[in-house]
Image 1 (cartoon, rainbow, N blue to C red):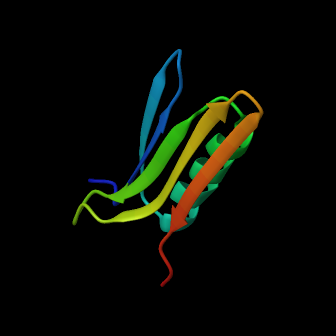
Image 2: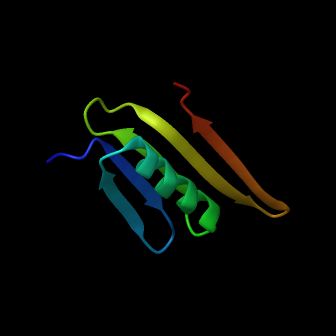
Length: 74
């Protein structure tokens, strides 16, 4: 059975990819990864169409960090 959603998270030490069946599970993993402080980039993609549903990027600066996030609205 092909899973409908792919979650990818990227850190300095490792990258993580999970394929899951539901949008709810993909969102849960995505937000947990973003909030963990371990990953600097991540996204949720449809394995069927290639659509991007969520995306975040955390950039470090001398005086702090910048979080850019994009979430598709249904």
